[in-house]
Amino acid sequence: MIQIKGVTKKYGNFKALDDINLSLEEGTVFGFVGANGAGKSTMFLILATLLQPTSGELFINGISVRKNPTEIRKMIGYMPDFFGVYDQLKAEEYLDFYAASYGISDSERQKIIPQLLELVNLTHKRYEYVDLLSRGMKQRLCLARSLIHDPKVLILDEPASGLDPRARVEMRDILKSLKKMGKTILISSHILPELAEMCDEIGVIDNGKIIAHGSVSEIQTQLRGEKVITVNMMKAIEQQTIHFFEENPFIMNIEKLEMNNGISFSFKGTDDDQVDLLKNAMANDIPILSFTEHVTNLEDVFMEITKGASEDEA
Image (tube, rainbow, N blue to C red; front, top):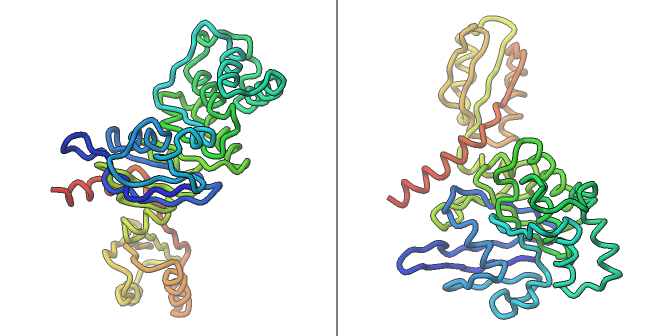
């Protein structure tokens, strides 16, 4: 569905994007995460045909973004990070204006607009003036605007930016509904946990480069390279128990817990290696009460990724 091949964007000697390569299947929800200024918006502007890359090619459904911008605009819905609204229009009129701009007939507009307002939970605000809507409502209205021509691809730049917790949940639920409809969705954010629940894949971008790509769990594994596991016993730990864990080639940094009935350690093996470890421990009559893998804090992962990339640049 989407192919990005060697896309670079330069401003003088500065590279806003540096050799971006990415391939996404139809129906994928992909999240670009990175700090402000990392290159997320630049990438989205190029995909939305609003900015030309210095080099590289992009294709949506086999059509070149650079060579056929008019065709591409029929296929995408773009929601920028800073959106504009016409304050003197009511919500319904606002959508009607954009639908007419896409050449949608009056009879079709009368069907589509109520459906879109229902999708973004704004049916009760259809006759409200846009300038009287809250920020969250305005963003949902702009999302409805990007859907007015039923695009195959949605490009959403920071759709949850500046929203309160309740509005974030509402936006997330709407995006989940769009995912079920089979839309291919690209979302950007500078907050990794914000994307974790709704995305099939995530790309971490820093200084114009994609430095990690995969599911959240894959990114954690490839960058952290280890898991932290806590094992609690039914009785005080004996030296032979410590020796059992020390002999495992995937275990390091063993620490006794304060209660003296447990240990924690770093584990660099696979999930299968972890299963084998537990099986062998039980076979050796080690009285395990609990065996817990700790979930890595996503913010810590993001900080570690970008720190590593910065050190490589230096």
